[in-house]
Image 1 (cartoon, helix red, strand yellow):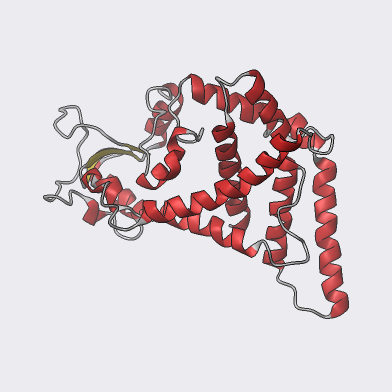
Image 2 (image 1 turned 120 degrees about the horizontal axis):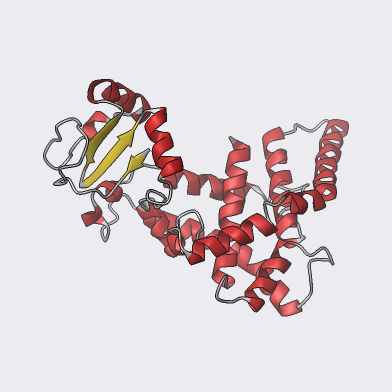
Length: 287
């Protein structure tokens, strides 16, 4: 667990390897940082400090110390450093994942727990999951009967995408008998690849305006496509003024909350909640 943005001049920093000029200890991480950190911990102890470029980071490798930080001191250490890639479309200002623990974060977390991840909400959509699985079975049966090759991974992705879109919007985002989900699948993968790349700007904030690797620029394009994709059904719902087929889907609930409590959530927050929930869930199912 890394705790960033600490002053190297602080006398309370734990021991760590001697940093090189400019690079600091970046050269010690290698291509498998988890193994490199475990090796460094054997020499410097379970609590050590590293200088990663311009960023001073404290690394915890013992279960006891991690418990102290994550359970007993969770509020003090709850905020996290924000990767430069997440600055695309100012995503860090709207996502519950990156917001600091404050009133806005608590409001969005409450909305998520009550309307998306609650047991009652999941139980109410059990029939929907059964229908989408049956559609997948029917699709596989059709391919078998016609003797066509079946891409199981692609078919499963379409099913997952439509399951999520029906939960959110009461509509399919892709045709189960076409390859229209491929573009979105590639888009989700591209977002995760860019977000997971080591970014020089995260270690040398002075390079922020240059974006030397182009990561934030590409993420801006990817996020823009996803936001537009989710913006269209939101626009349709607002223009029609109708509920999602009488099912009171997630979008209905969020729009109602937006009307009743605009200080808690607005249109932009709804789009970003959809972005985070969908890309995260689809990526996890793919892996």
